[in-house]
Length: 155
Image (cartoon, rainbow, N blue to C red; front, side, top):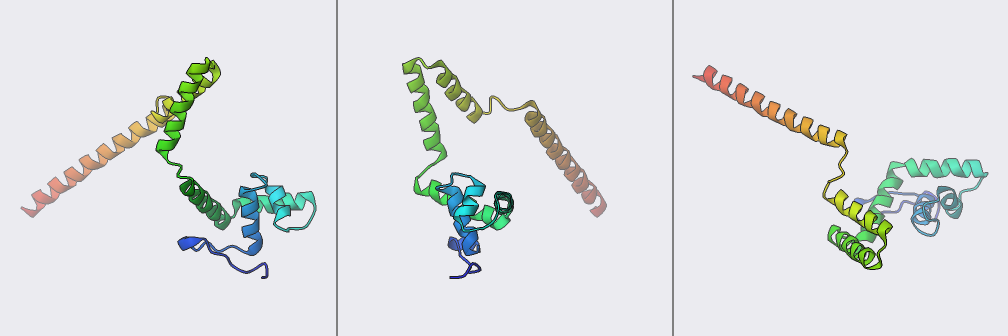
């Protein structure tokens, strides 16, 4: 098999060369997110600098990003990781921290629950949401005014 042989990922048909696929698998697996080590493992040759550049290029390649994202979704799906299971783990951790009297972990789990409830939303995020609501209301008002004018013109 040569390095230009395409590989597909399920129905998404993400086409990668053999080296790109090997790089992505190494990056997600045994190299634990180390782009340079993944580049070596995939069979790229060169100095540390050239391997670092190739790793950087692979990280920014849209097809490789899509492949990695799809594989991560498959992995999460296979492990049945859901928002509910994550929240259950946070609740379990919170109770365990309470039982042990671990104040640092207790604060961290409480923070995670607060984030889930958007209690710690940044002020700029809230302002953006309010601006978006104002713009939606303005568009609705404009649409009503235009509809009213059309009705007047039609009669």
